[in-house]
Length: 318
Ligand SMILES: [Zn+2]
Image 1 (tube, protein in one colour):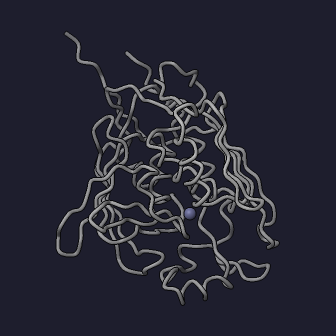
Image 2 (cartoon, protein in one colour):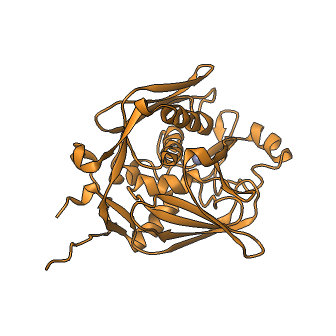
């Protein structure tokens, strides 16, 4: 039997999430269904008249906007926004295939992190499928820049993210995190990190029709050099960890997990999306490889977090 870590996986059951959109403040709901091997992440949207648009593959070429959050075009003048946190949760746990069905224009913000997705996925577990996982192996470094900010994808023997942020705010300051991916490390070190914003920006955003649903329940709010939330930071460097959470979600738009290193400085959704475009601009930059051809012991799906059941696919015998 093949090692579990080289096989694709999906959810052990269907999940439903209800909440509000952080930008629209409208009630929204999201269903995540298990999906067949090799289908990747796909989004559908149920419109108000009951019509269903999609499913559409979650890939970088369908990204239409990266202002404040990542938005995917489903065709028929329909899009889904704020996809990065749920994609981060799925991809961070090592899930390959899922069908996401959204009722509303943006995914629910929940608590601003991936924590509630983790708690829910724990109740249904992961299901290993009968197909070998594939990776996008980075062969040649690509870098995109904007002033002193950059994002890069580089060849590397492993799956590493190296992020640094630098904010002129004492609560944040300069934070860096180097993260060697495993599902367990994602859940323990990344999944609970909340999104954050500055009060000075909130007023401008709201006037433009954004952040109408943001609150201390779903965001860390910063004013001058203090934090307004009563809930203390979940990690001392929660800010860079949330940026890492975002990057994992944005990189899921590559269509397959990466084998290599992602680095960024003062990055965000726009640079994350651009570095994917840059990577896929030339066939010489990457190749699709089978998990069987990679030394992946260290980031194996066998390093699953506590409480997550992995239902193993068993080959029928005889
Ligand atoms: Zn985010």
